[in-house]
Length: 87
Image (cartoon, rainbow, N blue to C red):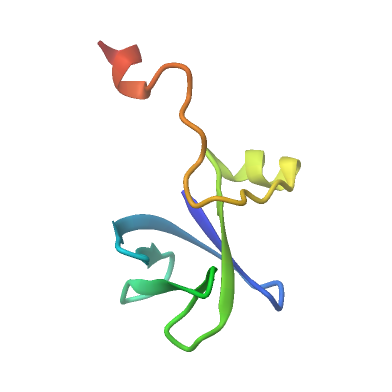
């Protein structure tokens, strides 16, 4: 799950659909269309040029309790991936 935080404090939940060259596409909960975010001058911006940050969480409670905002787009890889655990 990915959380999109706006500077005004607004927080949206979504799922990462695509990651491209300085572009992220996210399915936002409750929205009909996917949102596209672009990297411009070192910050992520919406289609309306609003600055946002991304936060990742395995579930809602881990984000709410940690309050930790990741500085990079990708979380650090786990010691063992979920695929390795299944196999």
